[in-house]
Amino acid sequence: MATRSLLLVFLSAWLLLLLLLLQAVSSLQLTRSDFPDGFVFGAATAAYQYEGAAAEDGRSPSIWDTYTNSGRHPEEGNGDVACDGYHKYMDDVKLMSEMGLEAYRFTISWSRLIPSGRGAVNPKGLQFYNSMINELVKAGIQIHVALYHLDLPQSLQDEYDGWISPRIVDDFTAYADVCFREFGDRVAQWTTVLEPNALAQHGYDKGDLPPNRCSYPFGSNCTGGNSTVEPYLFVHHSLLAHASAVRLYREKYQAAHKGIIGINMYSIWYYPFTDSAEDVGATENAKAYMILHPLVFGEYPEAMKKAAGSRLPFFSSHESELVTDSFDFIGLNHYTSNYASSNSDVVKSPLQDVTADIAALFRDPQGLEHVLEYIREKYGNFLIYIQENGQGGTDGSMDDVERIECLAEYIAATLKAIRNGANVRGYSIWSFMDLYELFGGYYKSHYGLVAVDFGSTKRRRRPRRSASWYSDFLKNNAVVKVEDGFASAASHAQL
Ligand SMILES: *[C@@H]1O[C@H](CO)[C@@H](O)[C@H](O)[C@H]1NC(C)=O
Ligand SMILES: *[C@@H]1O[C@H](CO)[C@@H](O)[C@H](O)[C@H]1NC(C)=O
Image (cartoon, rainbow, N blue to C red; front, side):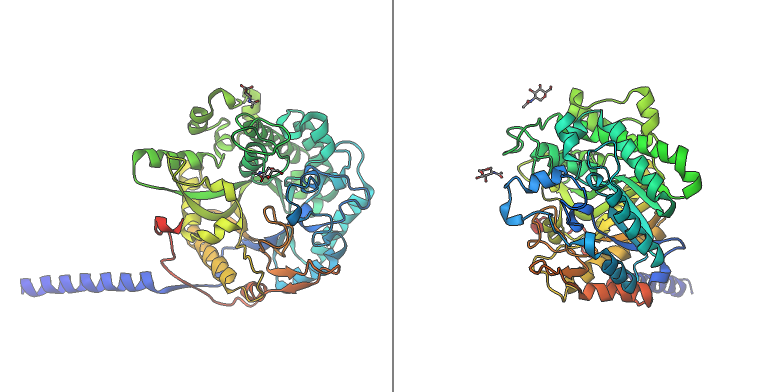
């Protein structure tokens, strides 16, 4: 009797294990309606990469115009015409509407709205954004706006070196004030600055993005700069400018407009290259450079203090107070995971190739789950929007099955994270359409759900297969199947 029941217990334990295993290898199925109330799915673009009309209707050059026209990457062209969104936004909103997009994130070109950087507002700029916003309202698409993405008015760069001067704080706040005042009644979500942590490295350390500042031996071909100091100044003033704009929004606009406001960080999940204590330490260091710590605790994390020492600016008590809790949500741009090592020869710095090339190399949806869990454990369970995720393809194929797989996996990872308690309320694809990419221009990397024919003056748009897939998911609640047990940390060979 006793042995028989023991055997039974033994067998049922095996049965249970088998069931669990079966579940683990089975595919995950999900639909749009599995996501919580209030969750929004969208797609994104950014001003310089989309609008074109660079010298039209009073817009003045930004540091990005200057950079692309410097002859550094002649093969990449420039954003003079881009998608010609300045003239085609009506058609584009129609496309979004047909696709069933619930939210659209665009950025405002500061130098189109306020051509001198401060002072007079350009009525044509106002008219453009108002008109586009009104189209979106009519289409019932939620409006998400980012104020800054790499396109500082050149005049402010010339006048005081832009973001590395504390003078940026007042000018940015005044610019934000114009945006809140003019557009805020229709904007659901404001993001102040996009991925300042990544732009610090590229704009001020390596110098391979505007404003092209760096110093030997960290970068080359820069017109000026100091790679050991300026990235920190950029981040510092970005945080202060952000916090100042948030305070203004909260004091003057939020009660009436009922929008939310936050900042965006570029997030990578890091695995230690080996399990040595040094590599584990390097991993923690790398994660600290997501720079969420000051927003929660009003000071830089120990890891940054230790690494940068006196090169790291510090917050006065007044500034610390300003920065602490200066967000309603955190936006994350997330594309990939990487390895961190204490030996910099072993692993390429992941931020070196911030965009697609590397994302295509290391697709790791579980990394997104890890990031969300890390944030929750380390900083708290605040509101998060995945503001950019996607896949760059090099051939621009219309039959972009790989992109569909990638998006499906990351959307599934988002749902899993939510079920594990993450407070995520939105997911947005980079990019709504092909555009002038940060690295590579028009032809080397395509991220768009919609293809754009950059060879023709008409810039004809053609939705890719991924666009109909997304549409089916959003409008028809189509079932998305994802093989469970997705890739994950995989082997080092993947590097
Ligand atoms: C720097 O400029 C020189 C001359 O234009 C060019 O040959 C070289 O490839 C550039 N280096 C980098 C890292 O861009
Ligand atoms: C960068 O700035 C630091 C601190 O002011 C200074 O010690 C260093 O020499 C500068 N480096 C360059 C390349 O100018």
